Length: 370
Image (cartoon, rainbow, N blue to C red; front, side):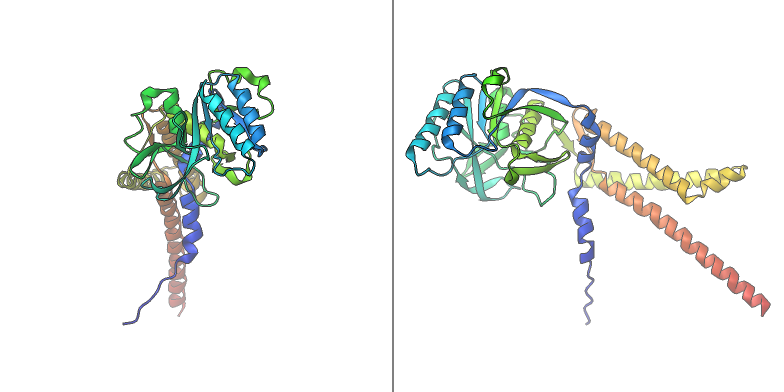
C-alpha cells in the first residue's frame, strides 16, 4: 500500500499567530483609555542596583517609612565572597520584618506549570526563616513574543502548597480572600490600564507618603532579562506581578467558557452570519430600486456588512468581559475564523459560478455558429 504524506508545515506560522492572539488582549487595548492610579501598591525600582550594601541601605530607608507589606520580586541565592555584604543585607531585611510583613521570592525548578508541581526550589541564602514568608515568583511560561496573560495562585513542592508571590501579597493585605482563589490555580490577569507608583532606589526619602502603609514591591521594571509581553507591549516582570496582585485584591475573576461551549457558540454565530447574508441579498433582490438591488450584490457592501457584524460581536464580547459580574470571556477566534472562511468561500463560489456561466455561454454561442 502506498502511503501518501500531506505536508502542512507551511500552516505553522499561521497557527502560531492565532495561538499568540487572544481577544482579552484586544479588550484591554479597547479599555486602555480608562487609565487609573493604583493607591495601594508602590514599586521600588532596583534595576540598576547590584551592590548588596546599597540594596541594604535602600531597605533601611524603606523600613523608616513603615510599609504595610514589603515583598521582594528578586532572589539572593548565592553567598557573596565578602561575608559582611551578606550580613548587612540579612540584617536590613530582618529589621524590615520587625515593622512589616516581609515576603521574599523563591524560584521553582524542574516541574510542570500545568499541574503546578515542582521538584526543586531555589531559595535566597538566608531562607528559610521563621519571621519571613517565602513565595514562588514564577511567571507564566510562554513562547517568545507571546503575551503573559495568566497568574497562578499556588504551586506544590514536596507535598507542600506554596502560595505564589502575588497571591501571598494579596492574602497578607486582605486575609479574608485566602480561600477564594484556592479552588483553581490559574487566573487571567486584569490588565486594565493602571499607573503604579514607582520610586527609584535612591529617592526613597522624597516619597515617604507613597510607602507608609502601602504594599511595597522591590524589583526591576526595566531589566532586559525580565521583560514580559503584555497587551501594552513590553513591561517589567515586577509590574506584571503588581498587576497580578491587583487582580486578586479586586476579586477580578474571569469565567472562561469551556472549549465545547465555545465551539457551539462559534458554530451558531457562523450559521447566524450566513442567514444574515442570505436575508440581506434576498431583501436587495426584491427591491424595485436599481441601485439597492445592485448594491446588495456588491462584494464591497458585503464586506461592510460583515465588518459591522463583527464589530457588534466584539462589542458584545467586550461588555461580557468588563460589564458583567462575574466577568465572562468568550474566545471569538473560532467564530471569527469561521465567518471569514464563510464570506470568502461564498465569494469564491460566486466567482467560479460566473466563470463557468461565462464559459457555457461562449460554448453555446460557438455551437450555434457551427
